Image (cartoon, rainbow, N blue to C red; front, side, top):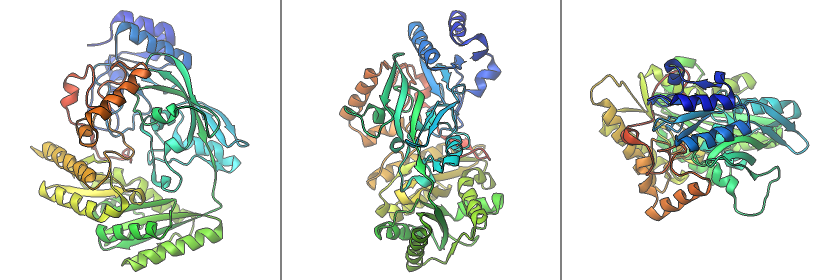
Length: 482
């Protein structure tokens, strides 16, 4: 079912006919995100400013048509999939950096600006934007806000919610409001914090005030190789237990190393069972001292090899391997199912043993690439969807892995969001009262169930078959990220 002609004409009157997409070819482009599942929208609208965005939202409410906000479409939980034949509202045209204010260390940007572009614009002033998802060249600030995105370098400095001071929002009711502002603190309830991570169910961010930080004068990157993931996990716990909080502390297992070396040849030890990639920052003296302490903990926990990046080129090469790891999984199998669970750091060794056991029990191969420093796991079950029954086995194994994370005291998601993928797992972590209270917050912002339906909470409006379909299974390739 496409969009009614009268709806298309009304939308075109707001944004211009060229910014309302209705052809099958155009709609297909907006039918999926970073997962493999697809659903065609009624139409796609690309407003050019905040006022147009609000008008579009209000118009869809009048027509009784649900909407799905969309950023760059790099999400990994089905959050931008237009469930329920919605009108997709894309923020792609809202792509300007409005101001870089070095005196107050803030950037004011529209939601369609890419994550990396903020740091590039701030670099001449010696500043940067801390959250750095591996998809930072493609993902946008609006999507980062919706999912509360993290990244490898968020261990010491925090994720998106720690770096967004204020947001101009078009609510689900079509009202334009500001949440927060340009200062660190504001009185009253933290509605800014509630909006960040709400997965497009409360409204659409149209402007954001971002905190910028001074670039550290020195950074040291360390690669440590271990016999297995369990031993490397013990080293992670020891580093944090020693009071060292690196800027980044990432891990890859044997399968991930094999895939990365085949695709990118980044110099990871090919015979290692796991590698840790740690980065410390500060003045040259502080960074060197922290690096020595990290190396000491790695050696004390049976590292097979420890080495520092000798120069900026080697450092960049090591990080190229980590940030390109998911795309490299195509060397192992044509498909992957990426999980996003969290466990306490102290439970990492046990968590990794359970992940391996679950994958083995289902006859699956798992490649682990994850943010070890904060316990944010990304087990990737690699497979070939053409093999009968594999899809179902993968989904069962994925559910067991998420259940294991919760049993170990962890959480459903660290940065990818609940989206469509984990809606049916939500009751494992939250009571009916919890869910009812979250739904009440949606109503405050004007969401009666028609604003990004089927996402985040286990009950939704207009989902139809979408609620029963599996999400977050993706094809491995060069455009895959975590």
